Length: 268
Image (cartoon, rainbow, N blue to C red):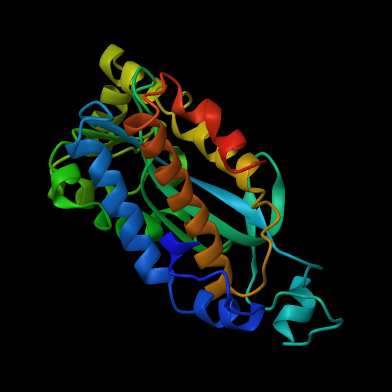
């Protein structure tokens, strides 16, 4: 309680917390990047030469707003989160809600942790959000990255060029077609090479289980609140709490597997 700046004799009411949730999103996002950088500079994760990025759709709180009603700007019933939007998952189909964007470390021999994160509505594609999520990384972390692995949704000329300007290579599955440009064929060659396959294989053992673990521990699918500002703050607070808990396990408890104890520490 004292660590949060609260006293036992006076606790802010629910409406005060609700107002604060609408304003702290940017601050939390910066703190996540700072904590990610702390893991790197204190060598709690191995030098992140390979990092991974991925997204996860999160269902909205309440009833869905069908596209036909949305186009007419008609809210047919109460309980609909009018900030949420439709997004499509390759495995789960269409989902009405929000999207978590994340970059993480990948070495399972150390600790796989979030390095930066963001939240948007579900209709925002992976490509435009990628630039902002990468830009959130602090310079000390960014300069250690050699490769960023991602699924095909991130594969685009702007994303490859942006990554090269940041001095690392984006590695995505690249399909070959009859008229595929030579520059893109080189990307396909690297992805299909032995080194490319080793690098890309790190994605499935790092960021994918990490996101599922976050969703399970903090029960953020569906999200517990309505409105983009509140959803951003709640989800990113959970990411930050996860980082802090892992850091505590590493530094204070000296745990060999800090992720294992997190559910017990937050009483899930």
